[in-house]
Image (cartoon, rainbow, N blue to C red; front, top):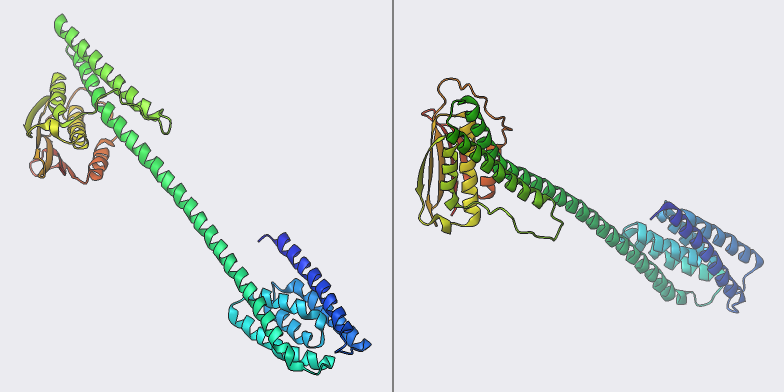
Length: 380
């Protein structure tokens, strides 16, 4: 609760206690059962004013203010309302045990006050005093419980907002990673083929016109496919939330791996393929796409870093047995005069993320024979 609001409530409590205390004193003076002297009336009013004023500090010293109001109430009927407010405030700001102990002081204080006023039946005030004290404590406990509940709800809401912001940030990061991985997988292979075709034309300057036209056609076709795939990825980035648009480029499947190997061969690379899968077109879409991307990335690395070597691609598997994908190539012998296309080094890291998301296992690096191997086992 803000400080200015607290001070306003405290001031209001002082005024209300003083007004109601004055009314109680007036009824007590007019009561025929009591015969208050001028000194008693003055003492009652002064002590009542002190108790009402002390309510201003009831938040800082709830126990002290409550005890003072109870003790002074033994000689002041005008402090009755202030004592009940102090007791209720004590139940709000402290556990129930101190409030119950202070409430117990109301009984002897009421008896002393009744004797001080000269009433004949002093014990008749015990039941009303006990009832009003219990009501004050109950109200204070209710306010305390409500405040704790509201504080708990606010804390839960704050945590929920923080968790939601964290989940949104994680989702944005995951989406950025996914888009970066897709762009690398889609474009790296095509751009590498373009660079290889262009490098071949640069080195072999005495090619016949027919071969030059064929190489130029391959360059144009490969560049066109790269642009189409890039346009498809950009289209995904520009989609508005809730608007789904069909991809203009078909997603690769397990049955497209032979076509991928053939495209790589047309660029001048040497690739052997072993496809030991019955009806690869029937494989699940995500599984076929992951296997295709693994072979694509591995062949791209062979084209960039191991030109002239013989790459061996093997894809084998069946439903309920898993899918094994392996791409192997020997190390390069001698220096290559042509400059390899630059790489970001994130291709294999992207494959690792892709295979991990598919609950598979990826291993890459030189084996005991010195060949560089990219192997993946995917669940099927």
